[in-house]
Image (cartoon, rainbow over the protein chains, first blue to last red):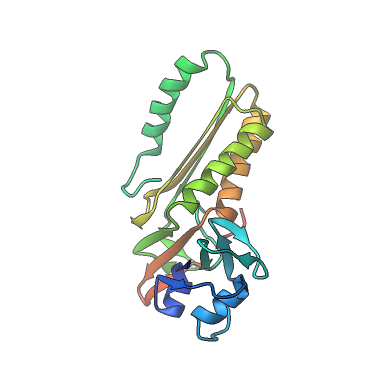
Length: 78
Length: 142
């Protein structure tokens, strides 16, 4: 089982905060997106984290991983 | 990480009290950055700002960035406070401070901490404008 989280504008884009996926074959982050987004395009500049570390879309996902999709970060002051 | 408003100057005073005891005489320089909520962005007035974060990943990356600065500049100490939740204009968003033996390291480390935080720590700003809410999509140049 893989947990998938969506934050900020990505959450609104897909209309949910979280999803789960049973790993029945080897999947990359890009494959995970494909499955949970019903084929919707990845918005420009989307970032991804696997187990809370920044990752690439071609990274392979393992059982138990937490995958998160979110837009560019905008914390801090001005 | 704070869900409620905080006073950066009070937090600093509290932290200095501890440092004075733990690192008595070790630091000759402290550099502080405080970032606050503005009431205007791109010419439009902002009523409130909501700061979203990724519980767990945000804390983790703040710790990593702080550790990097501590090691790179051999700091005596470093402090990072960040708000999340709903903020009003003038509310402090972030407090970053670095203590070192000499000023060059403290200035460089403070700059590093805030710039790395802005580009790596998962926070997202959503502004309430007269025309409706809007996600902030990019950081302003420092």
